Image 1 (tube, rainbow over the protein chains, first blue to last red):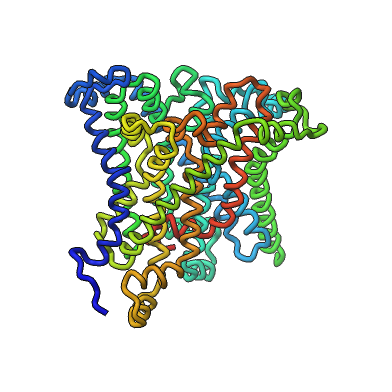
Image 2: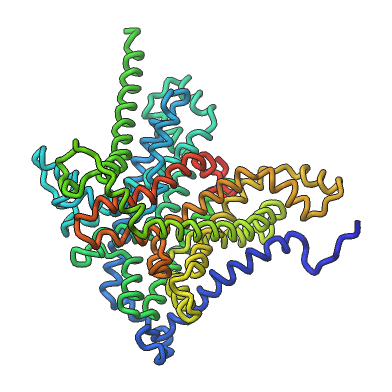
Length: 290
Length: 277
């Protein structure tokens, strides 16, 4: 059979549909967005779009709301990822007991929160933690504890706890898979040497798990950076601006104040942060291959 | 004391199980509470101290039969299914190419991963403006385009890991048998990764189904999706809480069921053929 000769090899022809799709929905919007970020582009004055160069970017440095949003987001990301890593690792160690009868049931149920739409999680917890309607303040009140979960002191922390409920399962999933794939020999050696549980954990398990932990940390960190739904569902950035995160602030600037150029410039700052982390992530992932 | 290590082990075993039980309750309680709320008569919804009551189907009936929630559910289904279908068609051949021929090498794989991680805030402004100028705002097309921006890279990345495991001999044999390269891919390789395709499709669908950020801005009116509709419930009085509970359950139960099928494929998919567990 004579095959039709083509300008491009088979391997390249296979990726043409993907390339076209991503060009249309991803690359072109990204370029357009950069163009928008260089303009004074307001949705309320579409016939008056003016080129302003880097002005949008320069004005960001003097914009306290932007820095506040960035600060809140960083606190959120570090707090949430830290707690999720500790809890996820602890639970993974507990679940990693081969032959245990209920392990599969436990795991399947413990993993469920990560699959639910975050807006539902946000509303569920807004309802359950509400001062008047909520079941948790009611139960805590019974034992003499009074907490206003969404007051100015605690609101950001409460959002972190909600994130921990939803996303610790993601850490658990990756850590369990990591633990299951560890070689048996080092653990045998430690056992023969009579090493204690704590010693084995510190000197054998943790070093072997380091690559998995780093990959999980970065993926989760990148994802936590996108927090929006909890803020939208519960606090709308308040009280004051104590829970205004970067995505919520961009949303507000673009779709409440209609300042598209400014929002696009903030988005591009966000790309830089994201790309830096993705480079580290990619290095880590491909290192493991070797 | 010969029995000491034995008891120590038992104690650790029981302690571990106890902690797992607590974790289980923490995970399950919100589901339980929302389900309970969905069955509460309207007057009791605002009373967290009521745990025992005569259940009523009023909330369920009103949401399922007398509200627009079923319409929004269909919207979510249409958007999710269309997104996944398009994403699979463009992603499957490309993933195969990345896996088998290492097309584009590291830079291409990096770009796919980067696209997967891109914050939605970056794309919402240009997508909104483009859809605005094309007069496609509040249509399914706008939302499908937006969801393709993350579902396509995720599915591409997901499938690479599955294609990596198909032995080269399989398609070589197929070509000896007279298939063209494309037929070998389409008729021999693709069917062998069917579980991967199914898991990727379900995972992609869940991502689309769960999105509220894009849907909030790009879909509206009769074309809005379930997550946006749920968010709308809180603006009503506390009295609407029972109905919100029903809407939440409608949005999460299908996903919870699906999760049990894809859990075991998820790790391989997330690794994209790079992380070897």
